[in-house]
Image 1 (cartoon, rainbow, N blue to C red):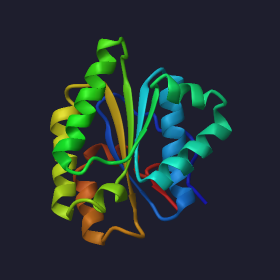
Image 2 (cartoon, rainbow, N blue to C red):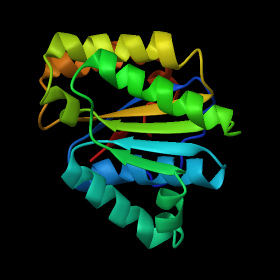
Image 3 (spheres, helix red, strand yellow):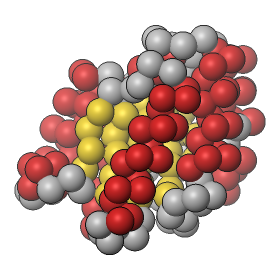
Image 4 (tube, rainbow, N blue to C red):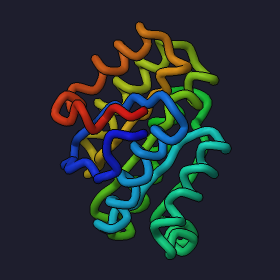
Length: 178
């Protein structure tokens, strides 16, 4: 049972941390966040392992009939994590700059962080979060939600994630899901 399926009233520059404890909780965080972005005309990114990409996309299709068109038009970008924090930040810089050059005015990002953790160390996770905060957030009109699975990350890793997402505390109950 998720706490809320209502979108988070986020503003550009928000870099949020969501923590979930079930697959349904992940959907409760990601689906409304991305759907709201699509409704507002943002280019949305979902960065996650392939099985999560599939699950979230299927849940979104139940609520948005045009999702396949959004994907084909590049309004929803489904991708797995890059192999390093630097490569992940470069991916966002290149994709967002290209989209801005084509007239896009805003972005939404959901990163299911377990996919990255499978590739890098806990300290490199912090490196990515800090890199995203310093390289992407100030340079693009973006709202980001980094989703952490409480079943897989250690308590210390979750504490580090919360420390790296000061904006989260503006929305404490909505960023936690079953």
